[in-house]
Length: 111
Image (cartoon, rainbow, N blue to C red; front, side, top):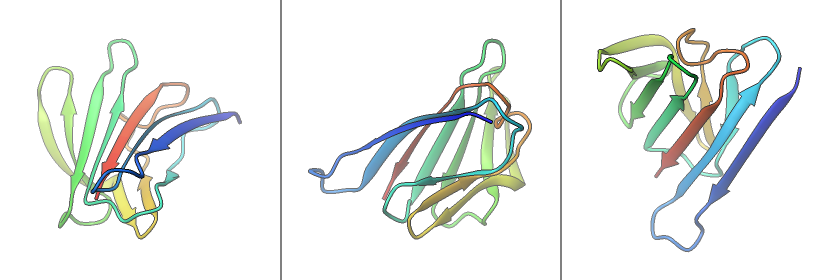
């Protein structure tokens, strides 16, 4: 399994912000992104051809949940396999529309 992950943080800002990219060529599985802070907002986008999907998590939402938006604009609230935040980052669950083997994901998190 090969995993490629990049990220950057803006230490000079008055709020914590981090963004990056993630792709795996192994079996799709939940994965953790370490930001160094507890996110209040997380957005993950799958930019695969024909399968663009975005998932957002806002402070106050349950662990494993997210608001999923499809390329056609359809939005749905999911309550499992979504995004779970932690004191130092967040985990992206195994939602099969978002987290797909060999498809590029971009993410951003704010606190």
